[in-house]
Image (cartoon, rainbow, N blue to C red; front, side, top):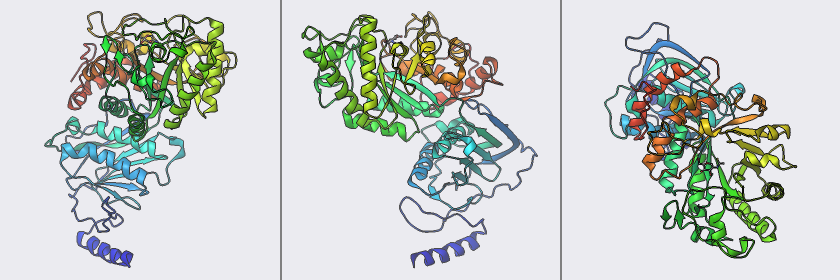
Length: 548
Ligand code: TNX
């Protein structure tokens, strides 16, 4: 009955509006009513004749696999809506993400509607129906004609990546949080795009300095703009333990009471807060990989529980910045009860496939002890249904699983080739190229210099498949840029170190090598200055970039 009324109303409306007839409104409020807005007439020609003032599609970071510009333009009308197909909750949420990005600056009140087939002219259409499997899980094809903006993907994740491209080809003002005049013009053409590597990440150290849930979410949201897909969450270190573990509550309650430089009140995430961050990342098609660093970098744990120490005496809490001095007690059975409890609780809260177990700079542990410890940890991680990732030192264990991952960071001796020999994959985070906590220049106020100076150009000019001899491209899982926070205290500090370098790592992880180089990239990056400003990012205006 309802359906029949709906059909009559729909036909009536379509006759009145003399419009293309296959879009229906099924709004979030569940009203089954025809769309009542009248689309602004838009040119129907998609021919090659350039529209005066139209530009070519450009300045996308990371650089897409292919761009074909057709020289005309699409102007987003005030009546525009976002149509998704199929009308699943997942696609509606993706559409809503875009609507939420476009509505503050356009003031258009863009809604998310479901459809079968392409909607009327003047709208944005997101579809996975008949999606091309050769695009892979994250690939998309964006087609802009003077009539319609269409993103087609094989999987929802691909649509989400494609939305970032839409944001980037709209005028800069689209990123403003307040009403802007427009017009909202996009150059026409086709972008066909998919990532080079499966893992394109950034790590945030919340142990050296603690960051609020809101700060962490913002970091994740900015990552999404550059199509990054892994958020590595460094949750424990000598200076602090940041996640509530119910079976060992003092880790957070006592071990979460310090950070570099002094005390810190309630500086940990409850499990509910952690889950909220996981879900936030998930809604941006970003996998969260939690890290509990061990056996070294464990002073906060050793201070929280006396029984974890070989001598049974709790250490004092630590607020300095040295590394390599602490270790769990390798020979005590309770150490493995502790590890099992922590990994069990963390695995239960973490939908992603990986648990990061640290394993770096365990210099106060003998190699034999280290190998014995990490081998047992790998067994525990796998027993809880997860794959182990660790800093590259973990490659030393005899039974390194081919599903485990070694994260390369050392600038001199590397264990990454050992991991490759054992059939494991390598994640590339070379400290002298990819560490976001290294200073840009000597004069940079924040950051460290132990791995060298990394200006925006140095950070960009390397390739993950050639940086370590003995690690061929076929063994490289991807790229990750860690932000260690010994010297990073505020959100603005985070911005300053991550931007503009992080977009470069995103490009190394996503874009094909051919056709890109620093002299071209720096111009594209320069055009992102106003975008970062509009998003409120306190980026460093590195003078090697021609900022617009
Ligand atoms: C080394 S790289 C560390 C961290 C420090 C960082 C500072 C690695 C696996 N460990 O503990 O925070 O240097 O740059």
